[in-house]
Length: 298
Length: 264
Image (tube, rainbow over all chains, first blue to last red; front, side, top):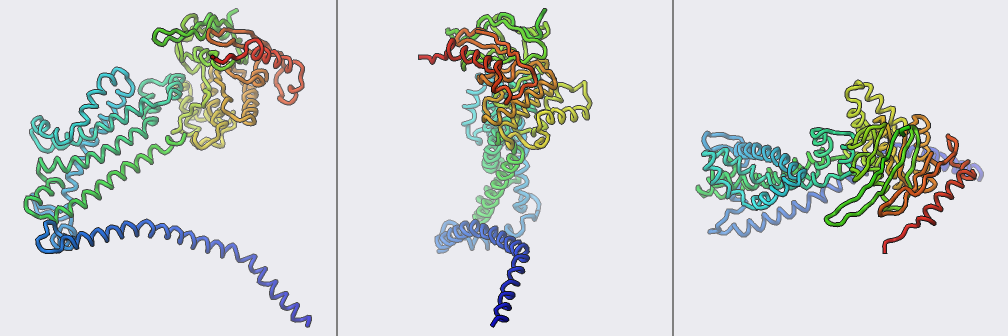
């Protein structure tokens, strides 16, 4: 009777010892698995709802536009009509008959020029207005009035001034994007804490050092808010401006499609415009978080 | 003989529209080289205004400040300030905050390597070398104040101006930092002007205490010498008769003769 008892004790003891050794590896593997599972759990939670909504939307659209005589093409018809446009954005048959990629590049180029110019001038003017009370008193009322002028209202004037479509479009982008950049930069500069100014004074920083070492980093969060609003407005304005000036560009592509009753192409172009606009916004936001990393935490 | 730092009949009034408020009246005082002087008084008595005048951040209405016989009329690194709220630049690391000052002050007199070594030396002086690559937002309040102190010390100022440097800290951190400041003062022999509203702090750290009357038109009420030998030890002083007597004098001044009167 004793022997089996001892045996069972040993049998019980053995796995105990083993269990003490095992856990490290087992737990490690388990936690690794659970971690991947957890991170994977987040993916469907984020991707399923938009997919469901898009699916429902397409379905309703399809049902509404399916019947004969519908004024707008159904999704299935869009895919069928514009298949070449969708699968090959890079073709180039000369003239205006290009893939969407080339149209987008042309538009992006104009935006890049106009926006870069607006960023440089906007930050410079905003700094002036933020730093000098007299500049603010003189310029701020003018800014407040001019910024409400719709972008396209500038186009006839700029066409008259530049006598060419290309610089006029760039000018429209410039004049659209510059206001939020000026105003936000000015607010940022005006909000530089007196402490930082005192530090600069005690260190005897000169104007240039003060600008680069105190002003710009301190106002950076505000400046980037302006830049982000500016890029959004630029992308809004370019499509409208290009509709009027013609040439290669996503805006004129839409206008041209409308004139040739290619409604399906317009829908494809709209999706592209939306995606590019979204990407531009994300890029500026990413640059902002990268550069202003330390500034938010005080 | 001319004192090292001299306040010469300083008056200061602020004008806003037709209303003129006189803050400081007839402040005349001298500080010797290597001396540690505290200014104590109730809030609103113009302590900070006086310090800002010495720093050159505010102009005096009448009279002025002389440092080594020369008039002070603009801010400069020879009168480095440790601000109450540390005033570190949040986008720079601890090292870069000090390095900014070192680069500016020693741009021509030290090589790049020497400036690096000097920055590290000053961080070491306040025991902050371990956090040199952190940003101000990532270190505690006491540590920020240490870095502010390192930045001021790194300028090799003729006078170190401390504007309630420990005001925003908890009691334990404050005591720790006071000990550090005492040790540094002992080691480097700086001339220090400190603003405080803490009686113990004033008596513990200072050679002389300037007690100010209540504003408006605050003036020097009394100057008390603290004849305690250095280095001073916090624990031993707690029962020291001289220390207690000095403390008593300051308390009497602040709470009997010049009680803070709340504006009705």
